[in-house]
Each structure stands twice: as structure tokens, then as C-alpha cells.
Length: 285
Image 1 (cartoon, rainbow, N blue to C red):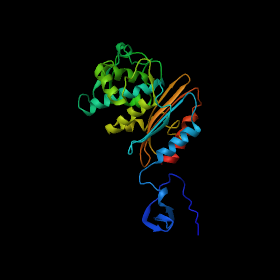
Image 2 (cartoon, rainbow, N blue to C red):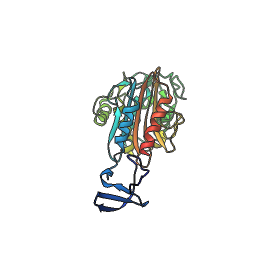
Image 3 (cartoon, helix red, strand yellow):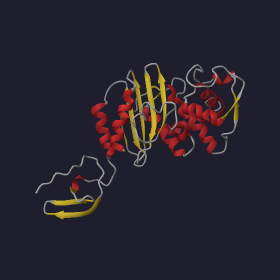
Image 4 (cartoon, helix red, strand yellow):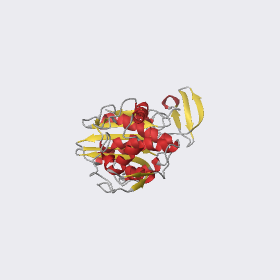
């Protein structure tokens, strides 16, 4: 007789045997229940459910979302190719590029750099008066590369970013721009900072692929109690961006199958990012 099986669409099940009956083939689960073979997929297709969810709940102006499963390379999102003022999200290319040079031996984490006036005056520098704990005026002191990378990653420190960019990218030189362009597929404007969620997501994926210390730095930021990590029970490496009515977050969520999530918002309440993150996690966990 017909039996009700309490499985939801896109739920993972373990099939131990394929059985054929007059009504067609069925899969026998490890719990002794039967599921129509036509409703099963060997591929992880949960990203389809994420796309359905985003289209149902989060199709609105001033909101861009990009999701990518790192194992399957499948993508979902809404308005993820539309640019928005990215604020401190544009620190990500610099954090990536500095770590790249550490990994290839061009730089060492123990290298030190002088905080001087020139570090504030190049394309890609931020207003020193913004976030962070380093002095807002040049103090003539030397800071280690690792300390600068950590402060820019964990505190979103503007001064640390400026020093990193000045010395670590030679004031946003052509090699830096070419490297980032190869990753995101287009020029990353470090002055106007108009960036899409997809660009930020591709950069986060590249940072994940480096397998360097930066990921651990981004797991321990001053902003882990808000936005993407707020309601998640798993580690999250993320970088926020804030400016006026813009609030963003770009993250690697270390679920069983890790994924990249980027949410850009304009004129939205901050908790919206946390709600989006939780909804997606409930599908991809």
C-alpha cells in the first residue's frame, strides 16, 4: 500500500540497494524506506534549491547575492553581476596579493614597513580616519607584514591596508591589477570601488585556494557576531564592508561542503544579511 516517506526535496539520503517492481525502480535507503528512483540524483543539486529560495524571497532592489559551492563549482544568486560601492570589500585584493607574495617567497611575514605620509597618497588608499586601531597619523614606526595583514583582515584597519598597499602592491601597480583581473575576469576599480558580488566571491575563492594564513585571520574578525557568521554553527572566514547606507559581507562558510557567500546591500537593515545566510546554510549544511 502507499507509504508516506518524510523526506524533503534536495535532502541527502543513502541508498543501499536498487529494486525493480512492476511500478518501476525504487531505491532502498539505509533506514529501510523506499524512494522512487526517478526522484533521486547522484549529484549534489542543492544549489538548485538555493536558487529557488533566493528568487522566492530575495528578489529586490539594493540587494545582490552570490553563492558558489566550492566542490561542485555550482553557482546561484540574484543580481550578483551588478556593481555596487564595495567599501572595505576592496581590501580583499590587497590581502590576497600580499599573501601570494609571501607564499612565493617574495615577501616574508616578518618583513617590516615604515608608516609614513606617502602610504596615504596612492590610488587604492583609504581615509586613515576610518576603522582600525593603528594611529591615524603617520608615527614613523615600523610594522611587520603579518601584523598589518592581520589588522586589515580582522579589524578592517584602514591604515594597515594603506601600508600593505603602498609596499605590498607598489601602490596598486600593474602586476597587482593584472593578477586580480585574471581572477575576477575584469578590472577591479580600487578608486571608485564599484564591484559586483560575483567579483568579491571569486576573490574569496582564490583566497581559499591559497591555503594560507589569511583564511584563519578572516575566521577571527571583530565582526564575527554579525552578518554572515551571526547564526551559523560552523566556522566562517569573512570580510565586511560598510559605508553610509552600504553594508556588505563576503565569506567562505565551512559547512560539510564549503561554499562562498557574498551579500551586498544598500538601504537595508543589517540583520538581513544574517537571515539570508541562515536560509542558505539550512539548505547547504
